Length: 513
Figure 1 (cartoon, rainbow, N blue to C red):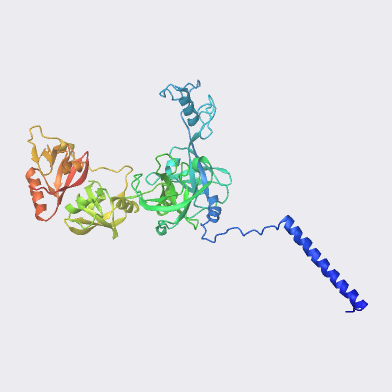
Figure 2: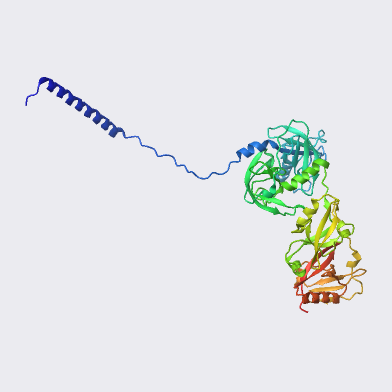
């Protein structure tokens, strides 16, 4: 086959180009095999899941309203020689390390203490020294702030430290030990960022909360948690109604606020439960509703005036409810009505069960105390009581709660056994009694340790004054009251006991005989 010259040349060029292309591809392939191909990395793992709430926005807005509270007071001057005896350490064991620890912890010696105190000799002893440190928060633009009474109670000079480090002098406006609240006022310093109280009735168990304060004197610290419980009674005072939270609260947080996610104060950090002294996740807040009312009174007059009913009360236990034929254990049982009290003047007597005040149900003695204390003195209220199984309402003009609660006065001679009195045995009740000398009732002279009476705390020296509201002056009176209760189908009787100028009621099961 013949190929024209031009065609041959063209074909040759195409073949040469094809060979060159293969050579290039071969070279590239050989290089890839020699060096290896770079791996293609997989994407990092990312999980699209619901995120925990951030408290940053809340904290940013409320932190300027929270302050540290430093409290100082004048202390007793110490001797010049600085000996252990003069410094109050004479009763410590003869242990140098122990004595050194106490010197440094209490602020004596040259190394300073918890507040950086130093022991200045000869001069400076009249200067106020740090005695407490806590937290607080502004509630007004012009410098009113709230803290705990126990933070300021021992002080004479007060300084607040703002979130930006400014130290400002403050004065005590007023304090209320019964609720452990106090109000300070800062004069000058311009306008202050302040926060509002929340409606704590809307707070639910499980809601997120943020506590801001000054734990251990560290300065502004934020912790978060949830509302753990409501209505806690920890025995701190007559109006206990704490909100329990699990946010970390420690020494120095006292008086600081707990916020909801709207930046409003739901409570004031006041106490913690801690076997170790540090946070174990159980803290207690004064509810905002209580604090708001008390703070308003303190700002107006420096004190809190509370209504006074003038009765001693106790819980309605299941035994007492049974003895009175009550359907529930709600209410407050009046153990005595004080002679000068407004309750007695209105007709309230021992044995009455207070069930309502102005139409609002009374669930317990604590709640009754809070309800009456919330009214101003002189307020007229309708008090509903159960008496002899019937409900009736009396109108009471409340008095002013005394500085210290008054006690009902009983005749001490009624507790003394007559010298020649004959002791009688109430075998079914496990009691031995005798007639009271110069008074009504029966004096308990002996209690069977295995009896229901002993289980309920009756002791020798107690005076039985009534059973089911009927006076008793003999064992026959007791037997009759027991028999009447049995005929009425009751399983227990209500016995009024007098001890140490106070009265209380005890429910005892109806005897067999």
